Image 1: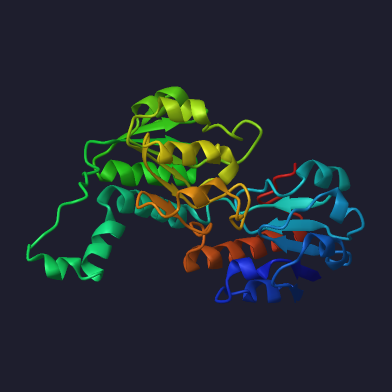
Image 2 (image 1 turned 90 degrees about the horizontal axis):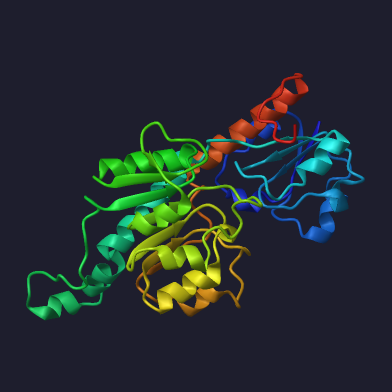
Length: 315
């Protein structure tokens, strides 16, 4: 069995790839430019990817029987074409729940508590020179009593909701099905009522651009928006505008419609502001989560060759 890992560099040099080596011959590429994908997978039995796009243009002449994505989302794979060709596609649901939830809450806490500003006040020496025992500017607020809106009610959204509730927040959830534990509302109601809004939805035709200028206009003045889902579920220019005009109190963004962040991206206009926290698509990537996803991918491969259907998304 030949296993080709096309963008191993996105998984980190410290990740344990031994579960792959236990299954067969492994060919590792740190990264693969689009024009080289077709050649590198021509004789592969198994294709392992993270961010690489796979579709008819590069799969047409591949011998691959199974594609394993190191993610829960699989919008970078043409699953309809794979189904037509009989190529199995497997994702890994739930592997990054605690990792992504942790970064989501860390962003909220950093923005609400103004941690970068207070850190700078001490580290710059201003505190030592002030002659005052404490500093209370900028003003910060407790999470207790605030309303936290969760867009998307999957594993990650559910974990964030539980943590928010533990802080004493009122939790609202926008999802297809009624949440058994938290008040379920539509997106407009959530935008109108929430002090903090975090996004945890997959990218699809339904969710693309769902947080647009209209939704943002409905949000409370001073609301915080956190996106750890996909960049394209928001209108990124509209979010930047809302920071510039003072409507939003802050944004925490880990994902972008184009990655890495291009030089012409609207976030470059606001990234020097204290109420903007941008991170490089890192929420999923705790060491524990990365090792977990490799083990699960290996299990997907082993299960496929054993004739089992495990985490199949193209069916």
